[in-house]
Length: 427
Image (cartoon, rainbow, N blue to C red; front, top):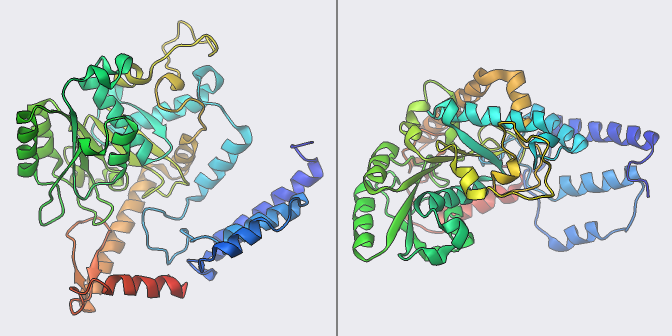
């Protein structure tokens, strides 16, 4: 079987693919935003025929992906966490798939690894870290980044944990996060073997931000009960309301209690790229680690996430391992093989999407994107207010929670509106 196909078939497929992608990219607005959900239709389409010609197979897949998907690139898809992919990122993903670099070992993909190292340092610097003490990895998403942060925090607080496991920890380890935080924190605790009950949810204030007094009380209570707090996860832009926890005050409390501070700013972290908005994450430089998703606000294709830390040796301490079968071509060189630096082993070149886009638009291009979306959010607030709607959240981020004040106490009102809008296919 020739998986390379013939040169003629490849030429035909490239042309068909280019036409399909260009048509979708240009005419997305002509499609329904969301499909009518029918599992039987989807399964019948998938099971229609076992083999196709190359061109027919491409048509088959394109039809399925067009008919049976929520089109997040659509201009009337308003879930900002899944934006339209920047075209340079689309090109980068194509290059990555074609050249298929393997980033487990530095010697097999030195350009790719060094590009990602460069991006880690540059992004860390924008969050307030010193470049020469910034470390980090590209991850499959914010969930893996948060899991990595939990592992770093465990290594930092319990150095023998890596070798001997949780049995070495006498007191129960505790993680704190707000009741509005992303539930990947709970999942990370489960995967780490700590269990969901090791995560303590801290109440929020009237702006949906973590209450620092409540956090302080819970830490003291847990210590009195014989537990061992070791980590706080602050959120820089919650999923539901865009709330930004008081990072500096939380950092002070963490310092007093020797707790690892992780900042989950998967969406909101982009504000550090614009001079007028980076104040929103004031104190981010005090976080021990940071989660940031470039596939959210920066419009990179899925998935382009980063875990950053200001502790340059800790990733190696947490994930470092040596084997005879991995390449030894860089002996004597001051490099780190990615496989000994992260949860992943074999890994694709995720950073190319961000790097290629950066080389085309520059940091100012990303800053302009942040400004534009902040302006759009402000305009929407004005339009909603002037039309009689009530704004329910107080964030400056372009995440707006609103309702009709006449129906605000009816629990069926918002689901009714959402069903009507989505079922229309128009937004």
